Image 1 (cartoon, rainbow over the protein chains, first blue to last red):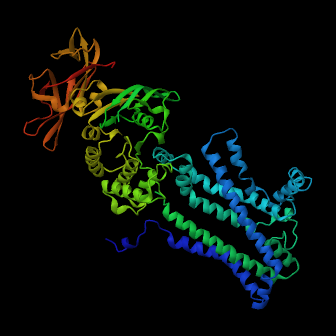
Image 2 (image 1 turned 135 degrees about the horizontal axis):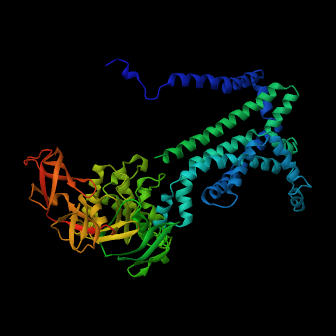
Length: 278
Length: 349
């Protein structure tokens, strides 16, 4: 017996991969973020609070986070319906629709912004009939919301899809033979089984919408306090050479976004422990 | 509740899973559907449960047309091979599920649900697990919970699809005995599917042997073992020695040599002779109707097992026989074999 056997692991390489992981994350993620914080320290505490509590900043943050949240909610509901159709039914063009879902992933966001603006402008295909009804989409917060929905949908679809595919059809048969109606089967058996994936999809769509810039600025109109998103305000401050102001807003965005994602993660972990993989 | 299946046909594309199957199940019976995979036994069970629909035929529960009702309206308890428990619900909620999804008008109140679930958990002897989640249970425990869940709706019929198929040998045996005694206790008409003959013979009152979408034989465990109706049943249940023989002019021939055996009504032409291994008496050369040469002998617990070569039409046929250890047997010996009981089936059936 050699003395080494006790130290052997079934999965070798822990030291190497852990070292690489820490170095890489520090280099790519933590270092730039640290720079962000460092830059903010150029401001005094009073200045910092003045910047982040100014009316324009608060409104921009409210618009970014509020609309992103709404858009993620809508994507959660609609994305789940899309997944259901794509996974559960066989219809002509299914593969095409499946591919269409990925377009918001691949499309340069500026292109998406221009396309959406053209569509919803007062004389656009959808903008014109909506204008008749008295609804203005382009250059209003509704436009921001639509752009956020557009870019967020694939996140929900692509996270939930594999989980629904893997869902054992026998649990639905079990529910049916126990006398559950279709509605009961969906709400009490299928959706709870999908909860962890739904939460992840929601979190990803939300995070993406909060940080979205390219497509939104085309359709938003960018009126301060009305339709100006926080990332745009950061860019404006930068172009005015007010770097510390920009980073102060960025730090607030970072902290709020981190807290929300962390919270969703906790909820997701809680749901996960209740739905462990067999 | 009696079940009557009449002339059921089910096709999957060009594959015929069930080929006009007829079956009657009496009240309180515990029936086994036994057959190799692909024999249609699970499909038949699923059709009775309402999880699959036949292409033709009838299913009647107490004379009433069951095909007019969906799975949820048949009051059938179904137990799946892989349990199909709800992973996000604890044991208690799994068992309570069938009670909670009842229409409001007939639903039990919370106290009554609690009482009923606890009774069921006591029945399957797992009350102490009621707060656990399915992933925290062993296979045998999961299957007992699945059974409790199926019983919660007070099913008129209990259907079990390979209920012990995913369990290891020791747990299988325990659960088998337990299912038997549970059935004696609750007496609900039950059908279970299995490909394990030992399981079918040990647990069931009656066994239905299926092959290629047809029923080969229905009978008590004793009947299907002692009096197999077809060559398939004889080969599938119990261990048999099978010899290719010819029936000519009312006589049985092996390798062109007539044997002093009854053809038992098998028509002229190539046939098969089936003998249970323990029904083959081994004696010195000349003592039996068949002569053979011992090729290899190996000890096997209290018995010894020998490969014996028989002269055949084309080359020789090798069979395995068992004899007690005290009888001396060496390679090269000539032995006489006398079947105490045997069956002959035409090769075409």
